[in-house]
Image 1 (cartoon, rainbow, N blue to C red):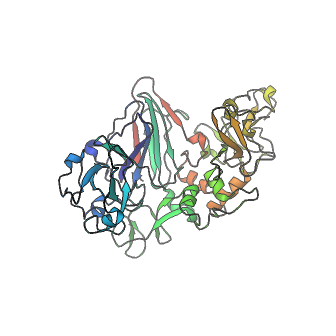
Image 2: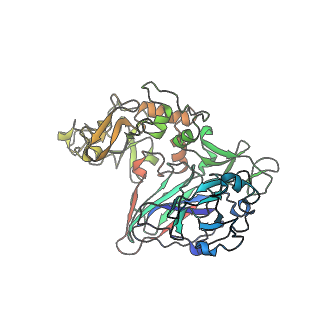
Image 3: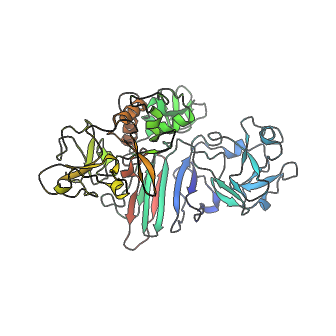
Length: 478
């Protein structure tokens, strides 16, 4: 696999592997020393062919600055250092030049602008569309997705979905926030092991129990045909997959998040992307958990006591209590639960005792939304602390709901992007093939990963150390 990295914020920098070598062989590893304050993502790119796709450009070589670009660097074939490689510029000639014999001599090539440049005019380079150089996790054909060369040519190309992400914010050498995320789908397994022993949800070690590519719902599969090139993944008589899993004679190399797939292909088979639901919202509204016309987002199911469909959707030290359990009302939606510790729900804003029953509560209340987007404190027993803060459920908000405003905060819709919203559940079940919601396959393969846009409870693990630095071992693949 080929490692890739992006960062957030102007103060961050790329932290390169040794010798700027982004390729990691099977059963191999590379050490990367992270600075305090760094925040960003790492991911795995699979089936990359930099040498082959750029083989017709003899000037394509590793570089630190454009001064390193000396091979085949002529006025008619100018190169600049971009993405850690000397790349042909195509300001003159554009895509036809890149596709021609003086360019990359490949009909798939394209002329793309350098993301950010202080040079004038802004240079364009010959490269390829996402999914061409690397089959998954591609960043527009660049060898290095983020970075700056010559102090003026800046690449900021994120991962093309579907892709599995490791996200981390190193707030200090002894404090790290992190998660493994599938909000942009999945291409490879990820396992994360902090050097500090796990304790409940602190310093937890999220990892995949199996390869989601083998259980991905049919409508979300990212596939390619098997080839005769031998590998360890047989797929039919004399044919093989180069990555992923062989399923039904096809190589499944990734599993899409339905919102990303609808955005790329509004006619994606089986997803009903633009079809209306009874409330007037569409399926892709539910997949994207926002109103596509206004960009206003739905609320989350995890801003009170987190809703859940099973134990894997709760923190590692909690269980999913269903209707009739731990005092949840019997009219709570079937198949939906609330996360609790030994049957006790966590204290929430405006929901700490029986005197708070009926009040608006939870994180949105603390964020300044006057009605907390429908979150209400309910009684779960007779004890003073037997209360829980849950979204509107009787009746639930169906569809997107209405927008609520808070000073200095974005407008949010009262529709909940979680199991408790019947139209959201309908859309997710459609994406899962019609029988079970797609995220059940996600959670079954990779428990406690950040599985969908409002799976907040799995989106921000924290690890603290009383003294020694925190180190992480992040494993991509089986």
